[in-house]
Length: 347
Image (cartoon, rainbow, N blue to C red):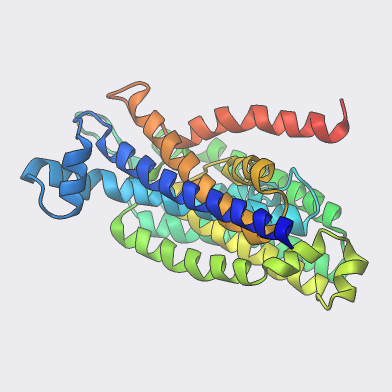
């Protein structure tokens, strides 16, 4: 009993330290940019006691971007943790189900067919999306179409968790083929708009969109946390989980569907940000183990920290040019993906 108490206390302490770290990372990121703000200025602005310029920079530009990083990082990471459990594969993540590719196809469809994007002639020659909500809706729909097809096949044919991943990969190739076709027939302006949207970028999200994304993330996260014991049982094997009263097929399907919904919402508002759903859970398993009572909150905290730090790096590495954060996370995630693959295969 004493060992178990110590086990729980250590993990609760790690969760508290992780939460404090996230708070400090948010404060640090809020001060970084073309205009440097001290921690004192950041705190005063958050308390509505700051000067006019520092408050405008924080509230109008940086804070919504940072909080978007927290919500998106949390969402993608916890979705990845749940999918790795339900699909029984450490390489599983929301992106292996064809979600990001489906979203990219949906966005491209709205831009090319519905004329939602063009190149805006300005001093910066910026690419803009004429109808961002139309693009977002179609990106969301495209993401969910792939998931619906995979889950329908699973329901009708009783596919194994491993086969679900293969079905997701097949849908990915199908969406990539459709995206390539749209790019081929698109005009130069439409092609530029497609490329602009597919870059994962937290800078495009508004306070309203952040509210909508948070409204999706909170209930899904709570459901995952409530079902933490069921996810623990799944890791013990199908028969063991059933003997404990877990409806394994139901928990797998609902888990995959909600994780996909969460990811689709993130991709629809921010574009494609890869590997966060893989990085967050795996980095926390080394500290927390595979106990989903602690892994779910820990992965969400680390996913938020990872994405906020990646976005901060994206803002300063080539300042004043801001790199899309999706590029940074891909650079970080690709080596880890290869490491996990090599370790899994015993190479």
